[in-house]
Image (cartoon, rainbow, N blue to C red; front, side, top):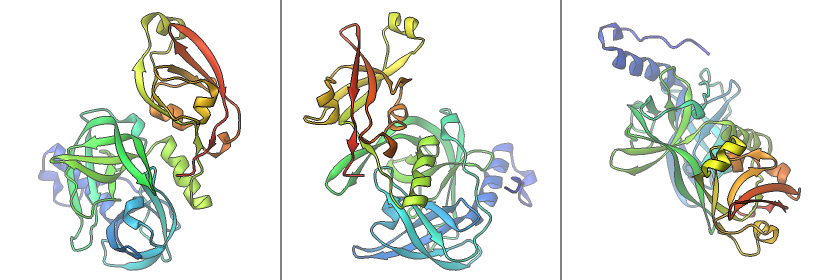
Length: 316
């Protein structure tokens, strides 16, 4: 990665402006405008170069059902791309350009973000010569409803920011002050509110699965959960502060067959503590399908151990 450098003429700006200008100058060449044509019409958005051999990261909803399209970079160069894989449940997609691309952006870790931190949204929508807005992380752990076929799902741990997202910015980069990409801009949730899919261990797994297999196989338990604090005595005993409250168990699902119940407080999955949605998601990839999974819950003040056998999520 080349070092983040202050662009010419920026020395006279205040520190905040210098930082934003430096991030913009660093990332704009690495963010492409993309156009696709598919059976449901044309689409457009942005995409971020993240490898040195032509792979770009964008939103699944940007590429839709298209098999390819055209990527145009800030220097005016353009090249065709093909869609490597899409994952509608995370709203992520990987495409590959069949030509040389700019030096890749560096992917950061959204798990290190804190509310109030400076972030910069960078896009390169068609018809606009690059688009840059800045703001702060205004919320973490948000949920974004998505749909895959007829099944509704939720993208967990979405980043909320007040950096304005302009039309065509979907698929563009959300970066920290060092120029590392910590999210993929995905939606406008309201006036002054933008949402981005985080870059973290879970999404890196998704991206690698898309590159390798063109899809993401997921295990399915049939649980809807929400983070919840543990009772003080349990927290002292286990050293764990939070668990996952079961708000719904799908009838006939692996969770239902295992005996999990609404209002159970999930403490561990596969013997690993869970306190947020990612803790469960990390256990729900292909290697968990059909494999007995130990789950410990707190129920009516007592620890209860169950064994569930996840199926494969047909909507993934």
